[in-house]
Length: 356
Image 1 (spheres, rainbow, N blue to C red):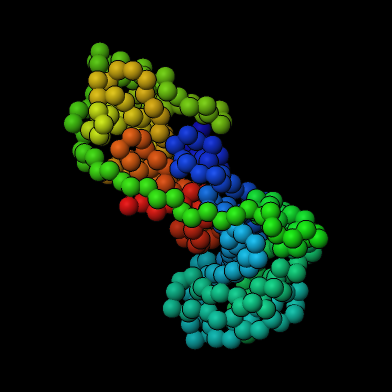
Image 2 (cartoon, helix red, strand yellow):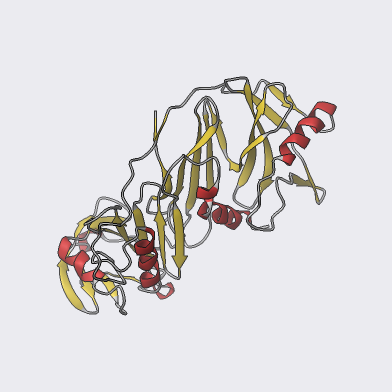
């Protein structure tokens, strides 16, 4: 079972979960070849492109961010790195931005960071957006170093951004422009606010397998199994002698006569995930499923951090906050493709909120 990619599939569909923040906008993600886009519950879309496979030793990325709403300009950032070599910071001056060989001028680079980062100016950003339907060679270079960002997938990804923000066919579309004004494009929404209610930091009871109470509670938890988006086995436990066995169930006091039940559901090469459910304190009745990808528990909070593998480690992180009645999903974030940037380089959101 490739549990990490099962996770990513669930993340891409996370807005369908009943535990996401009540919202009018449902976050969506899409990726094609060397580009990806994540659009959040606020209507903001963030599209990122990366170096082609032929340039793996010089990782490069461009991030295009656009808020929802009429007449919103695209903001462009970039990141430049190296794989297996140390950049000579004395040779990082005068890096220029090129599109199909045309010099769009020097970029302002922060050389004190690794990777190198910066922001494209208005002319450079506008120049890039002229190629949303054309082949383009995107290059950052000076006399010593050269980085390339692939255009493979850029058109399809930016079209998805336009579709999400309801700009297709309008004068503000990035790909399929039209004559319509932007009066009916998607309106931006503020980040929802969620008030956290603190709960117990440690379990008050741990149920061990092969006991009568454990079996009763475990049955309630498994009965709350969600509709799976792939064929993986749900919370099958940890293999022991080639047989997956259920693990102990920890119970935490919440509020409003509720408890949080957790158990280790799965373990992979780089990650493991705990299941989390809300139960009545009597440990009877219907359980409410929260996630099977939990990594950490804190007072009033469930967190998930799952690591991907590839050309650089990337991370998928989520957060659920107890509001006194239920766990509300308050964050769903992805650091971008594993394309040579250790730990990922961007914060690409499906769900973003303000927690108080």
